[in-house]
Length: 89
Image (tube, rainbow, N blue to C red; front, side, top):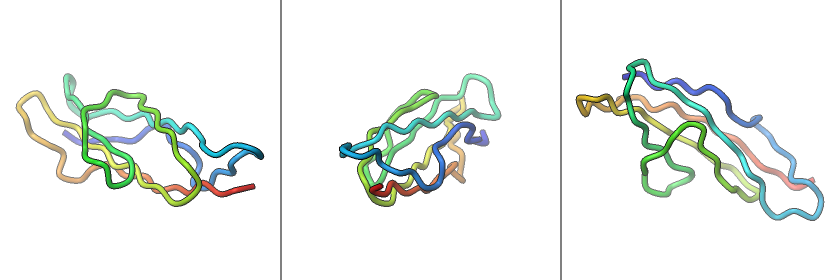
């Protein structure tokens, strides 16, 4: 199944004054009905996830990869990926 990324944060986010973290969300879908997903943020291990998926991030560069797994167990060979940066204001 092909994984398609829908909603995602902007490429550059500004952390509001006085905050140390930010919540970002991603929405994704698969080309096959009934597919499940595995995703992660940074270098953490891939884990099961549902769309939409939210993460708490701190200032710096971040990457969100995610892929669909079809009902037959076939994995998308090219995960959807989004890179973004959180900067201090």
